[in-house]
Length: 131
Image (tube, rainbow, N blue to C red; front, side, top):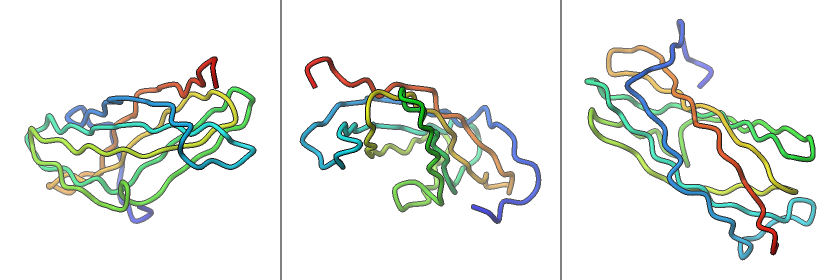
């Protein structure tokens, strides 16, 4: 991801959708962050050119004040090529001490060599009252 050259612009043809967020207490979590959430994301390519997802950056603002940034190459170990009109869907999980708000971006390269990004709509990791 650090090899991105030139100016990166927000790409209107790439759209990120948070399909679902589920509290999953059955997943393993450390004692200091006991609340695991699974989130389902889809990245849609509404543009006329293929886009390869090269990286991501997540920002997690926990309600108790801690902010963590997770960034890296690809998405869940892949660098998917999303064809025009296509999409890439995946799920992953994150653990928090309490609730949190999450945002970020996916970074990609178009088939014409432009570096682009698309914002991840902010969503909440809301710990249920019964937890």
